[in-house]
Image (cartoon, rainbow, N blue to C red; front, side, top):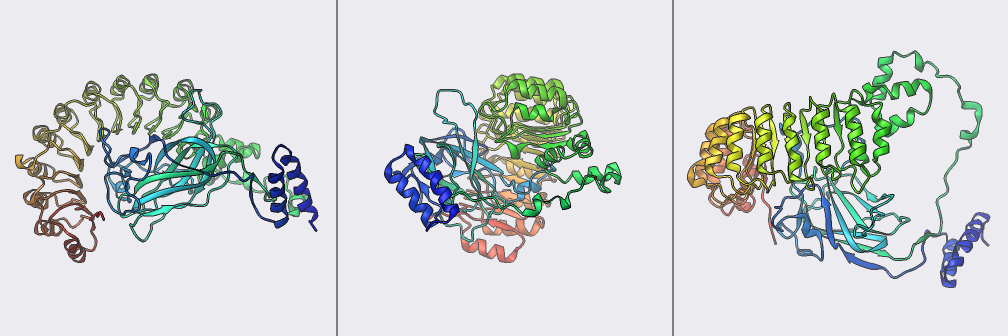
Length: 595
């Protein structure tokens, strides 16, 4: 015999089943009677691989090839079930915590929710919208980075403009470190959602990993007909919540506390909690709306819900705003030029830091507004804003107090970067990684040497036309450099003496990436050992001319060295790595493999 509660659900299901088949209704009844949480109606499951990579925050690869790029995540597997380091996989730009400890890393934002771990993301479009029943990620090297999987209600291949875009978390978890770097199929238990989707987003955190994570393919499984949960979890109501005995009408002694102490207490709340608390009473409304609570504001964790209305609601509270993080926000129409410009005009006067990574709503008018309303701006991050028109970047040259500028994966051209270097002479940190539209990096390097002598860090990752002449001018003029990334710069040749000249010119060097430069040799390593005693990070992946003897000399001469990547160095095998690790246990020596 059914219980009274089960009978109530049975009647509800009978009503909902009238539009379905008799078989579906019978299945619904069986689910209720057996007390199971079933998904109904039963439909044929569709399995599909990603059709297209729609957006991503970073990748290890080049903009002009397929090696190690996010685009490898579209289609069927290229590598799986094999394990190892393969160029046909998708690889994010970084891993571990070493990059957070570099001089070029900005300080973290206050009020960032403890459960927000995401550092990178990728969005994938699939052919057919389905109600997801499973998501499978084929990880081929150092798995464990995925911390969140989301589904979107918008069809990315629809010709109609998106309206009421909704994101739903299918699964989330803490950052993990899998014990083995071997390949695996990651298929977490996902929750059921009320809309069909053909747009998934994977968010990752690689901070616990010992090397780059590599992904090969993503499978979306689902049904075309809407499932219905047979049983819903009833909310538990404590009877004491309805009892008036414990209700209090006053503020107790809370309003007797000094104003500054209440402000300090509230400073530990996240932004949503602060907004909710403001609705509780007049006293806390006053404190929660105090502009001193909003000198730093990170809206990145709330990218899926942020809109023009959200910015409008915060506008009156942010008159003293100094640091603002809008990274990942506003895409697919959630933010408009008008809403962003209105907020910046009201709140940009005191800004010193503005993070706008992957903000695809930005256009030239937005950058013009920034240049007009943020006269004291010192840090600007436009990383992966790859849809900004090249001419938009000329407005950055008006921000003459800039000290940190990130233009990774943007379409900035030579005229704009030369203008920026001419006027922004206080620059200390500059990232031009994967800026493929700059025609002559030798000219750019010469301008840096002449105008930006205070540079501490410079990222020229994958600049394809810097020669020994440009590098010589750069290191001769920018002797304050502590970080220099020349990874995948194929036009630099050790035979010209450029790397030895670099080592002699930059005694303060902490980080040097010479990734994939096959010509780096023993004499270069020995010069680094002799001239750069403060070296902490060195990447010589792919070098064929470096011997174990020169590496020993380097490790003996650089006691602060704690990251050394010798992957694919033909003279450095695993036996040598194990020997070096035994002699220098404080150094993380990286050696990737394929099998």
